[in-house]
Image 1: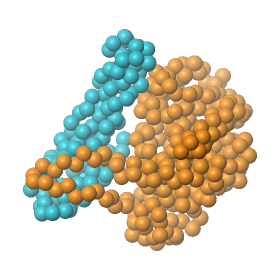
Image 2 (image 1 turned 135 degrees about the horizontal axis):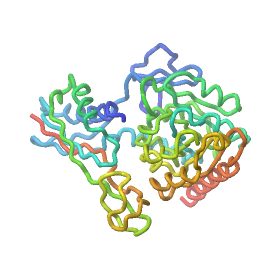
Image 3 (image 1 turned 180 degrees about the horizontal axis):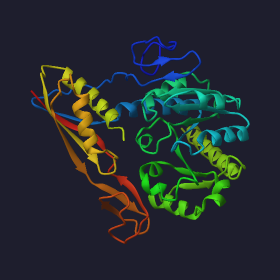
Image 4 (image 1 turned 90 degrees about the vertical axis):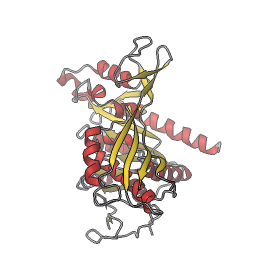
Length: 267
Length: 113
């Protein structure tokens, strides 16, 4: 029995289990055909019924469950968000290799398990979630993926969201922080075009800096535009190819992880 | 953005509430949407008609109430009301604004028969 929504677990691709998604034998999970039910208390009155419920309240409940579970396990979790092609997976592989262990990954894409396979080549466990037609991961999907990972205290969990700078901003997954990845080839005004995502993120990684000399881009302008939409955002310039900035990025992750452990120990 | 998913979320709540008691039909649903919620209203209207088909809220009027966008200015430290995400601070003209309200997406209430 699935502990997230009560659906029966362990389904092989092609065999529905009535909850609208299948659970794969290889740890790949497919969504896109339906969603689980919601429980809301009865509030019937005469003709006008007060509801006062958030439209995303169901997602938020799943996300809160994921957050509680990760906190209890002592796992620091980041949600990586970006446009398609910003270099998320390559950067993630470089990050995991530099960490030398203690990483696990939930990979979100509409189709294919290519990215999870690339992650597994680094030695880190990875679960692929295919959203079907969905444009974002949600709290429910991540809850299922967590059941397929064997996490240990002190691990870092990376959730690589579907490449999309719009929808994933609104969907809490239970992470400790959203990490926006922006590559230098995308244009300095990207933060102004898609402000919501960069406002929701606690840190931005300005990726592919090795390409900057070939692209006539102004890296300082990227940074000032990021701070225009989010005055408190942390920014690190990185290159997965040359390793530039990886130490600072790992330092940011470790600081976040130890702050979480300190807060947890303090109760 | 993801107006179809949002409508599916609304339908789940409406079905739950309307499923109890002797409600035969939902005639109106009112939402509160913040200016910075990223919701495209015409897309939500379109998704509404499609997603509510076959439910007690089929044909119901969808009413969206705008909630203002609020932001904290990091230069004059005032909480200000702004219409657009990239507007400057109406107080001091600074561009360093951090939204701190206006991302609401709530189902307020509904009228039923």
